[in-house]
Image 1 (cartoon, rainbow, N blue to C red):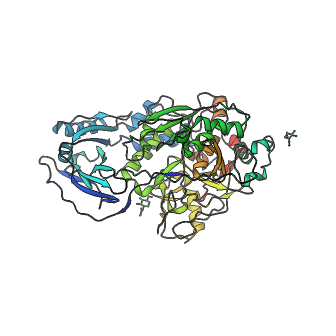
Image 2 (image 1 turned 90 degrees about the horizontal axis):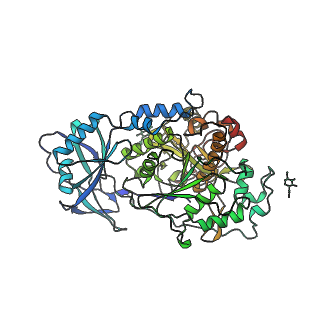
Image 3 (image 1 turned 135 degrees about the horizontal axis):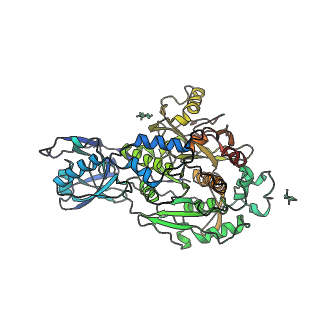
Length: 573
Ligand SMILES: *[C@@H]1O[C@H](CO)[C@@H](O)[C@H](O)[C@H]1NC(C)=O
Ligand SMILES: *[C@@H]1O[C@H](CO)[C@@H](O)[C@H](O)[C@H]1NC(C)=O
């Protein structure tokens, strides 16, 4: 499973009228939505005295400079490789120009409104205004909408304007045309262990190279150690934190972790735990019946694989206000830290077409910021094959979010052991929002040439291809609410790959070297030969067979699965 945070059903037609333009400034329509998103109905104009909290994204001073700096510190052949930026250095690229701050402040103060900065670099401002003020500011009519199924109400608009002279200074205003996500909690399927299967730790010899046959139908940490050559020895570097993100009240349970370690990693201390960080009202209830399948999986396959690496569970609560599920909030939260985690793994996602381009760009740029600070950001690619983050009906392929962002590492799923093949649900494809980054240009183009006219017209040939890499994602044994069970999904693959990265970082730091940071420029160059290419399988969806896996990169399994010994050499250890 990868938990889907999906929203935006098909649009319905509608018709709205707008207030006459403000006198004084010439207003220009800035963002517009053709229709009310499906599932929502209008309840008329919002009460004029209701208070709205709006966020203003200011145009960042130098996103191109940030990207250049990110690539310089992440590309092995660069003289600046591994020389990550400080918090202040990153903020210089992101901070809005003084004239942008001045222009937006002057506009707000004409309306008697003052703003407060809410991001470390000052590129996000927050204002509390009445609906009447907001309507006047942005030449719009905020309206009350209700979601017919969930009953959730939201004050939004289908179109707003900004003064023409603020173009180039004010990036966008939120929430306006982005409707609230209706968090779609997947039915969490746990599959009982196959009969007669003995937990692997009691039967495998962890020091042999051979992969036990039982790993074909039951994946445990010992299987991953054998399959990928992952060391069992404990990491030593206390500064080398691996962050595991949690959303939608998925709680990571310590008692389940203890059962897991006792059964499957008896060589580790069964009391090994994680530290907890919270934002947006996040918590981490330890009531066993409230343990989350996803959060248990994510903590067990980091703590249980990245032996000895300190893990931080970062629980994002329900009071997110970023319009992208809290994905932006968690990055700004980590950017504010002086020592953010070296690796962050996330097993949640959505479909790209449900997110506004402006927000997607802003979030992707936040990944560039954290990457420039030296954090590897990994996400599971999604579980719907070419039909999106979860399987669904479609005529054209549905890229997932945020895998289309070129500044993070997307992880697909494999299954089987000799050899590994792609898991059929492994989401992959090409973004409609982001173009092909240079680090993958030649390998993606080679794939497209091989693909020929297959699936022609169903995907965007100029988009960023994903996933980047893959790891096991079926028959994965976890402990959940006190019992052993197996799960499947790219949700398994991201924490497993993240654990490999954290163990490499541990050795790098111990050797006095920098951690890996943003991985892709390395993975697509010197790291390429340290991955095991997965060349069979495909990812069906939308009434097609999806994309075929093949020799070299493919939009099912990416470049392949980790080979720890080879990666160790490739990173210079
Ligand atoms: C496990 O591997 C070690 C080292 O290769 C060997 O000495 C030992 O006999 C093996 N044990 C079993 C049960 O295969
Ligand atoms: C295809 O992807 C590019 C990004 O490379 C984007 O600019 C373009 O809008 C996309 N086309 C469609 C139809 O979404």
